Image (cartoon, rainbow, N blue to C red; front, side, top):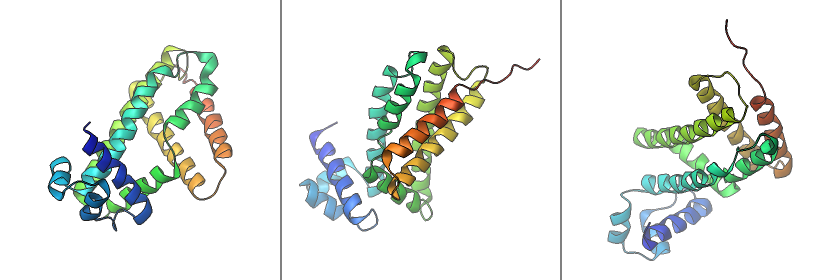
Length: 193
Protein backbone atom coordinates (compact mmCIF):
# COMPACT_ATOMS: atom_id res chain seq x y z
CA UNK A 1 0.00 0.00 0.00
CA UNK A 2 1.40 3.43 -0.92
CA UNK A 3 2.32 5.93 1.80
CA UNK A 4 -0.30 8.39 0.53
CA UNK A 5 -3.03 5.77 0.56
CA UNK A 6 -2.03 4.75 4.09
CA UNK A 7 -2.09 8.40 5.20
CA UNK A 8 -5.52 8.93 3.63
CA UNK A 9 -6.92 5.90 5.47
CA UNK A 10 -5.34 6.96 8.76
CA UNK A 11 -6.61 10.54 8.60
CA UNK A 12 -10.05 9.47 7.37
CA UNK A 13 -10.37 7.10 10.30
CA UNK A 14 -9.51 9.94 12.71
CA UNK A 15 -12.03 12.27 11.09
CA UNK A 16 -14.79 9.62 10.99
CA UNK A 17 -14.28 9.07 14.71
CA UNK A 18 -14.10 12.75 15.65
CA UNK A 19 -16.66 14.30 13.28
CA UNK A 20 -18.68 11.31 12.12
CA UNK A 21 -18.87 9.69 8.69
CA UNK A 22 -21.67 11.90 7.39
CA UNK A 23 -19.97 15.11 8.56
CA UNK A 24 -16.56 14.27 7.07
CA UNK A 25 -16.14 15.56 3.53
CA UNK A 26 -13.66 14.53 0.89
CA UNK A 27 -12.27 18.09 1.15
CA UNK A 28 -11.66 17.54 4.86
CA UNK A 29 -9.93 14.22 4.20
CA UNK A 30 -7.77 15.81 1.50
CA UNK A 31 -6.74 18.58 3.89
CA UNK A 32 -6.02 16.26 6.83
CA UNK A 33 -4.07 13.76 4.72
CA UNK A 34 -2.13 16.59 3.04
CA UNK A 35 -2.91 15.37 -0.47
CA UNK A 36 -4.49 17.22 -3.34
CA UNK A 37 -8.11 16.44 -4.19
CA UNK A 38 -6.84 14.87 -7.40
CA UNK A 39 -4.45 12.72 -5.37
CA UNK A 40 -7.26 11.72 -3.05
CA UNK A 41 -9.55 10.74 -5.93
CA UNK A 42 -6.66 8.87 -7.54
CA UNK A 43 -6.71 6.50 -4.56
CA UNK A 44 -10.40 6.56 -3.58
CA UNK A 45 -13.49 7.47 -5.55
CA UNK A 46 -15.65 8.12 -2.46
CA UNK A 47 -15.87 8.17 1.33
CA UNK A 48 -17.65 4.82 1.10
CA UNK A 49 -14.58 3.34 -0.54
CA UNK A 50 -12.31 4.80 2.15
CA UNK A 51 -14.52 3.39 4.87
CA UNK A 52 -14.38 -0.04 3.29
CA UNK A 53 -10.58 0.26 3.06
CA UNK A 54 -10.50 0.76 6.84
CA UNK A 55 -12.38 -2.50 7.32
CA UNK A 56 -10.32 -4.36 4.71
CA UNK A 57 -7.15 -3.26 6.50
CA UNK A 58 -8.52 -4.48 9.82
CA UNK A 59 -9.57 -7.84 8.37
CA UNK A 60 -6.16 -8.27 6.72
CA UNK A 61 -4.48 -7.76 10.08
CA UNK A 62 -6.79 -10.39 11.58
CA UNK A 63 -6.06 -12.82 8.75
CA UNK A 64 -2.32 -12.50 9.32
CA UNK A 65 -2.68 -13.23 13.03
CA UNK A 66 -5.16 -16.10 12.53
CA UNK A 67 -2.80 -18.96 11.61
CA UNK A 68 -1.05 -18.66 14.98
CA UNK A 69 -4.24 -19.46 16.87
CA UNK A 70 -6.19 -22.64 17.57
CA UNK A 71 -3.39 -25.13 17.06
CA UNK A 72 -3.52 -26.90 20.43
CA UNK A 73 -6.58 -27.99 22.35
CA UNK A 74 -5.09 -27.12 25.73
CA UNK A 75 -4.53 -23.49 24.67
CA UNK A 76 -8.13 -22.90 23.59
CA UNK A 77 -9.16 -20.41 26.28
CA UNK A 78 -5.96 -18.40 25.82
CA UNK A 79 -6.38 -18.44 22.02
CA UNK A 80 -10.00 -17.30 22.36
CA UNK A 81 -8.76 -14.31 24.33
CA UNK A 82 -6.21 -13.51 21.63
CA UNK A 83 -8.86 -13.92 18.94
CA UNK A 84 -11.12 -11.48 20.80
CA UNK A 85 -8.28 -8.98 20.97
CA UNK A 86 -7.45 -9.56 17.29
CA UNK A 87 -10.96 -8.56 16.33
CA UNK A 88 -9.69 -5.06 17.17
CA UNK A 89 -12.79 -4.17 19.08
CA UNK A 90 -11.64 -0.70 19.99
CA UNK A 91 -14.27 1.87 20.71
CA UNK A 92 -13.10 3.83 17.67
CA UNK A 93 -13.49 0.99 15.19
CA UNK A 94 -16.89 0.02 16.57
CA UNK A 95 -17.99 3.66 16.34
CA UNK A 96 -17.01 3.70 12.67
CA UNK A 97 -18.73 0.33 12.09
CA UNK A 98 -21.97 1.64 13.59
CA UNK A 99 -21.76 4.66 11.28
CA UNK A 100 -21.30 2.31 8.34
CA UNK A 101 -24.33 0.28 9.35
CA UNK A 102 -26.49 3.42 9.64
CA UNK A 103 -25.34 4.50 6.16
CA UNK A 104 -26.63 1.26 4.62
CA UNK A 105 -30.26 2.31 5.21
CA UNK A 106 -30.14 4.96 2.49
CA UNK A 107 -27.39 3.69 0.22
CA UNK A 108 -27.85 0.34 -1.52
CA UNK A 109 -24.38 0.43 -3.09
CA UNK A 110 -22.82 0.96 0.31
CA UNK A 111 -25.03 -1.78 1.75
CA UNK A 112 -23.54 -4.18 -0.82
CA UNK A 113 -20.01 -3.18 0.21
CA UNK A 114 -20.77 -3.72 3.91
CA UNK A 115 -22.35 -7.09 3.11
CA UNK A 116 -19.29 -8.08 1.05
CA UNK A 117 -16.97 -7.21 3.97
CA UNK A 118 -19.16 -9.13 6.41
CA UNK A 119 -19.18 -12.20 4.18
CA UNK A 120 -15.40 -11.99 3.87
CA UNK A 121 -15.10 -11.94 7.67
CA UNK A 122 -17.50 -14.88 7.90
CA UNK A 123 -15.25 -16.76 5.46
CA UNK A 124 -12.19 -16.08 7.63
CA UNK A 125 -14.12 -17.31 10.65
CA UNK A 126 -15.16 -20.50 8.84
CA UNK A 127 -11.50 -21.23 8.09
CA UNK A 128 -10.68 -20.86 11.79
CA UNK A 129 -13.54 -23.17 12.74
CA UNK A 130 -12.32 -25.83 10.30
CA UNK A 131 -8.96 -25.65 12.09
CA UNK A 132 -10.79 -26.20 15.35
CA UNK A 133 -12.30 -29.41 14.03
CA UNK A 134 -8.81 -30.71 13.25
CA UNK A 135 -7.84 -30.44 16.93
CA UNK A 136 -11.05 -32.01 18.24
CA UNK A 137 -13.55 -29.18 18.65
CA UNK A 138 -16.96 -28.70 17.01
CA UNK A 139 -17.20 -32.41 16.30
CA UNK A 140 -19.52 -33.73 13.60
CA UNK A 141 -20.68 -30.34 12.27
CA UNK A 142 -20.71 -29.98 8.49
CA UNK A 143 -19.48 -26.86 6.67
CA UNK A 144 -22.92 -25.27 6.49
CA UNK A 145 -23.41 -25.71 10.22
CA UNK A 146 -19.91 -24.37 10.94
CA UNK A 147 -20.72 -21.36 8.80
CA UNK A 148 -23.89 -20.71 10.83
CA UNK A 149 -21.98 -21.04 14.11
CA UNK A 150 -19.38 -18.64 12.73
CA UNK A 151 -22.04 -16.09 11.82
CA UNK A 152 -23.45 -16.38 15.33
CA UNK A 153 -20.04 -15.98 16.95
CA UNK A 154 -19.45 -12.78 14.96
CA UNK A 155 -22.84 -11.46 16.05
CA UNK A 156 -21.88 -12.27 19.63
CA UNK A 157 -18.57 -10.44 19.36
CA UNK A 158 -20.31 -7.38 17.87
CA UNK A 159 -22.77 -7.47 20.75
CA UNK A 160 -19.88 -7.62 23.21
CA UNK A 161 -18.30 -4.63 21.49
CA UNK A 162 -21.56 -2.72 21.85
CA UNK A 163 -21.62 -3.61 25.54
CA UNK A 164 -18.13 -2.16 25.87
CA UNK A 165 -19.14 0.94 23.93
CA UNK A 166 -22.08 1.51 26.23
CA UNK A 167 -20.02 1.26 29.40
CA UNK A 168 -19.45 -2.37 30.38
CA UNK A 169 -15.93 -3.18 31.51
CA UNK A 170 -13.85 -4.73 28.72
CA UNK A 171 -12.38 -7.42 30.97
CA UNK A 172 -15.85 -8.63 32.02
CA UNK A 173 -17.22 -8.61 28.47
CA UNK A 174 -14.17 -10.44 27.11
CA UNK A 175 -14.45 -13.11 29.82
CA UNK A 176 -18.14 -13.65 29.00
CA UNK A 177 -17.31 -14.02 25.29
CA UNK A 178 -14.51 -16.52 25.99
CA UNK A 179 -16.74 -18.61 28.27
CA UNK A 180 -19.60 -18.65 25.76
CA UNK A 181 -17.37 -19.53 22.81
CA UNK A 182 -15.59 -22.23 24.78
CA UNK A 183 -18.96 -23.79 25.60
CA UNK A 184 -19.90 -23.70 21.92
CA UNK A 185 -16.56 -25.10 20.74
CA UNK A 186 -16.57 -27.98 23.20
CA UNK A 187 -20.08 -29.00 22.14
CA UNK A 188 -20.42 -31.79 19.65
CA UNK A 189 -23.26 -32.80 17.44
CA UNK A 190 -24.45 -36.34 17.69
CA UNK A 191 -23.92 -38.28 14.50
CA UNK A 192 -27.11 -39.16 12.64
CA UNK A 193 -27.77 -42.82 12.20
